[in-house]
Image 1 (cartoon, rainbow, N blue to C red):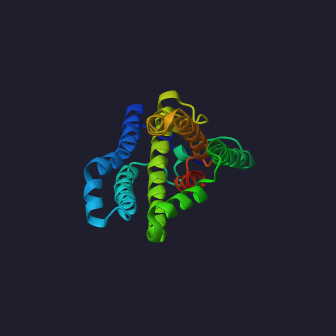
Image 2: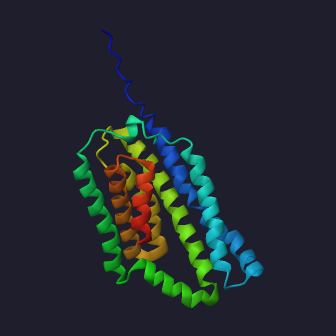
Image 3: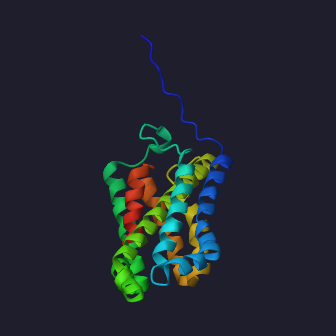
Length: 228
């Protein structure tokens, strides 16, 4: 009686995953291009009231295109053993995910003394008036596109760490996200905002590990933490 064994998963080279992670980080730079090169033309074409919505949609389109191109290289098929390494049981992983989600949302509320969806909706209504509803829809699209880039960077950062260090239980993706996307927020939002972004990035990495790298579940969890 013959038996067959499944070949060991190919983690690829650390340099490959590093490059893909850095390409994902570079995708965030599209918003800088939009801000420097296109915002003036956008304001001239649609006026000040509608300019934020168009900015968000143009930025989201670039982020979406960049993330989808990079995801062609993703090892996150549901049958991919690399995406589902051995680890703690389902109940424990669910507890990790719940704790990371609560920490991500709660720490932001404690830091800013406001609940993000409500506070941003109020500010947006004050800024754009009658353009509120379509502007809010554009903002949601912008956030959801940003989450896709975040998740892409998380996945490739995780593969980078695993290939380099050989440990799948460490949230390498969250650490890489913190050192790139999170660190940039120090420049954009100051030390406090940057510290929160870096901490949230690590928690997103915990979410990614809690669902064993499943792309759809990671996206759903990170989107919930990010939007709320």
